[in-house]
Structures are given as C-alpha cells and as structure tokens.
Image (cartoon, rainbow, N blue to C red):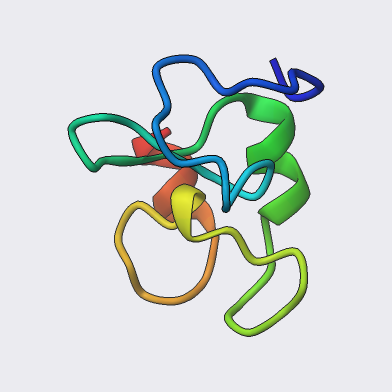
Length: 68
C-alpha cells in the first residue's frame, strides 16, 4: 500500500504519501512500513508523521505502537 499512487478512499491528495485524509476527515497511518519509518521521530523531524502519532503528543513512540 505504501507505493500506491492513489490513496484508497481519499479526496485530498496534497498530503500523500506522508499521510492520508479519508472522506470522514480521519488522518490515517496506512501501514506498518509507514509507521516504522516514523517511529522514534518527533515534530518537526522530516520523518515525523502526524498520521502515526495516535496520542497527538508530537512523537511516534511505544504508546502509538500500542494503538497501532
């Protein structure tokens, strides 16, 4: 899924491939590969991914992995 050119069920392509907005306005972390790329990063690191920061504490860590 990470290499797809068209996000599934997406109406907003401006943020792809960083994260996807779905029609219900939920930011998603599409797969484990994307999560792994952002794991251990904090905002504003280049590899930080808001879609994988489930607890919205500006880092992707163990707490987010548990929610994934």
